[in-house]
Image (tube, rainbow, N blue to C red; front, side, top):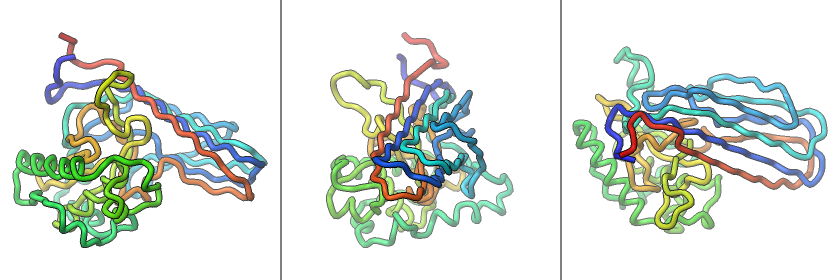
Length: 297
């Protein structure tokens, strides 16, 4: 496949399955799902579906961050929940998704202000000051993107990718403590460095397509599960994406499902139930390339 040029598109197919098995029946289960892509400056859903077992009535709404949320209740006794989100999404080879909000310039400071303060998974830490950061609000878009990529590269080369030292409830501190972590941890820490510099930065959850899946050699980290990356605000270009886990700016390989201040705003699945059962969680994510706007050469 020849390299993509700005403006060219791809169609990616995704399937995200989450299954929860309980060792004894539970009741009054309530679940919220954040697995559905919405239209942004970088992507356009072509079709999406959501299937839940046991069969239930699923309702939806958009949250404060304009993420598409679905929810359902299972009141009767049940020993498993199976959720499959799938669809086709057209993506573009751009790193900037634009302003994604009111076009009235007066409202821009309000839209980005909540991404400048500290949040539960991105607390104020002295460690942020140890990370070299050249990203500056005075830069033009090209300079800003270059500095953002350099910052992402620092995390990529300085911290190991290690899924065994942190968990979903970790905050940015644990990446520095253990010297490694997963995409969630690297995104949180990079967001902290940007916020320390006064740059609005938000957490992005979604999927990434790995062209080399099944082949020998280097692979994109995080492609077999829900992935996380960072978007930083540029006053002229809007939100620009960078992935510290893979040392790259966001491109056509990424599908966004949710945004927030940090992970705790965007978990793919959040739920409660009544019962004393132990539970086992199984997650499978598959992303494949269906087509591109350019011919292979």
